[in-house]
Amino acid sequence: MDYKECVEWLYKCMPPFQMVGRSGYKPGMDSMRLLDAFLGSPHKNIKTIHVAGTNGKGSVCNNLCSILMEDGNKVGLFTSPHLRDFRERIKVNGEMISEAEVCEFVETYRTFLEALLPSFFEVTTAMAFWYFSRQKVDFAVIEVGLGGRLDSTNVISPLLSVVTNISYDHMNLLGDTLEKIAYEKAGIMKKNTPCVIGRADGGVKRVFEECAAQTGAKAIFCDIKDAVDVDIPDYQIENRNTVRTAVKELRKLGYNVSDEAVERGFANVHHNTNFSGRWQTLSTNPLVIADCAHNEDGIKKAVHEIGRQKYKTLRIVFGACGDKDVEEILSLLPKDAVYYFAAATTKRAIPSDQMKEMAAAHGLVGKSCGTVQNALATAKKEADADDFILVFGSCYVVGEVV
Image (cartoon, rainbow, N blue to C red; front, side, top):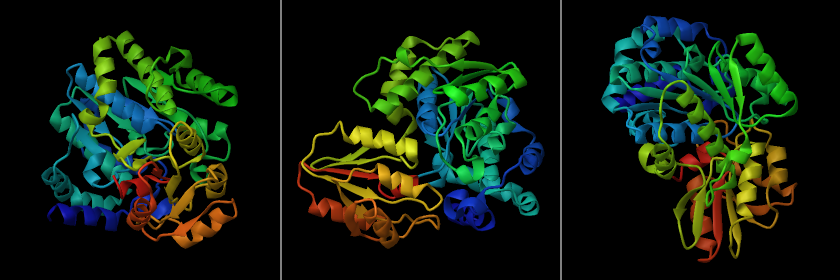
């Protein structure tokens, strides 16, 4: 099989969550443990950092990877979902796994995979560990796919665990309270392993404290007052503070990451890791920005950033997935914008006509544009040079324009 055939085979045999929603989610660790054992547990050959949380996982993972690269290390990075190319999920020093190596993995283990039928994410996780071990990386930064306790990445025994924050998302799978969601995220805590927690208070903080006591992990809560960064989106200040705290813990473990590497890592993250889709400028005159905000907390932060912009008319290309709390999200969106409703190419996407009707009930006015590409093209055509166009609502919406 060539690369295209290999990826199509993965999608057909093990449809991913990003395409089919809940039916693509396979909770529990049994299949992953069997797959991991069959491959010889390659993750045991590498030093890992494990990152969970509701929002900010991608930012924290990419910044940590960039910093470790600036400190002279060879670093693996496993994130999800991908925006355009499956191989974005698995990188070493910013370079995606090659098409040939994806094919090699699929063809070598196809018989076993067809017999076991693990989830798409389990296969992807196993491929990442296999690749990072072959590449002999110094570190691998591993992003949790969904939750933490039952996520396939949780087979690892990391040097350091990180939980960015807790807010409402995937409630149908993780629980309908912040405390229940926190419990799932806290499931990545390991005995005698530091766990940096980016933002937690009240009942959420108590969950982390209780889980740390039960597992023998060391919980480290970030102090947001440590943040000194400027000229970046406000929400990235929180993420950078989490990263700085994680670096402090790595130093305590004997990894002497320099202050210079930290600052260069932040400055060069987009170049080093090809990080995209987070308040990313796509063009100017008019200014077009894409952001992967897709849940209540993320949307609130994106709306806050809108308030920091200067523009004549705000135009928003918006689409969302049906398994999100879309009514709550729509209630948070600015009513003084012109909307271009669109549906990404995924079965989870709400059709643009339906989205327009739902939005109208919240006082949001716009037009149904069908595809994301058509929505952005229409917004650009109608915009003046000093307008501001924001593309957001879903990673899949952003993935079709970046």
